[in-house]
Image (cartoon, rainbow, N blue to C red; front, side, top):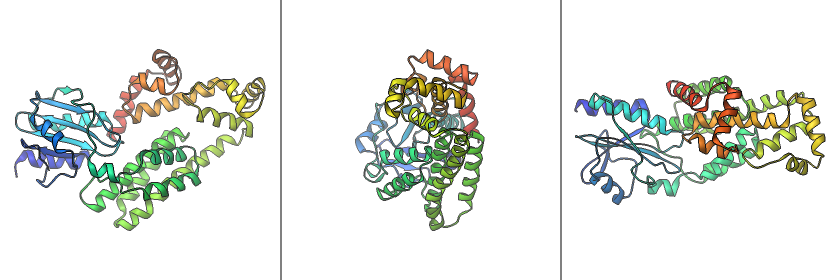
Length: 355
């Protein structure tokens, strides 16, 4: 076995990314020279093999399920990919750069996307769990809604096989649970749990997953993990709501549900069937802040979460969260957080990758 092949095997273990070798005929094999897990269309693979790329790393535009990058040097073409959305483009770029440096002893040039979209493997198209069901399940976790979580969890697990991220079945199941924990950690933070508490719980659960030794134990743990997060979120919500009246809680719930929409005080008054001036006075009296201040603080908490867990540019995040302009969004963010959004992303996303 060559030293470069040993290096690639080690990097696959370290990064938890799939690293596949693409030959001149457009065929993929993994770093152990076995058939690759991913099954991309032959026409696409042949195109990736035939195009005369300049050396460097080409970030392939992600689909809804997988991300990928093509590493091209004078000796090889490697497809580096991950079939879970929790893998960020930043992580992919850093891992690809580290692999390139290990093979070539200098840093690569990073190119923009080669094609509009990396096509979905057929087995993922047929068997991967519903994205919409997953979004609803995660929303239930964020809102501390255990009954909805259990409902969507059952639908999700019965809708198809979970993605494959490792060849060993036990390791694959552990990786899936760890990715599941990562997604739930984000929802817990968006649901109001303090980041330090959420990350401590995440670390504890990941350690528990690693200690399990059978598929049956891991399967039993899967649903319980979501319920553990929900219990923490509910406890946090109860503590926050203990000093608030029911109508104040309804005001905040309505603002969270309509975050990013053009939702005015008139709309709120209509939905709650109360006078808008009465709502504004009541909320200020009970919380010490205005309804607009709560709306902005919640939007900023979502802003921080999206900076940390997604690759969306700040312009898109600002639009999703309903800010009039990206500049206004950045000013609001800096006023509350103390630093600009891009600084926050660089500082905290790097810390997350180093954990």
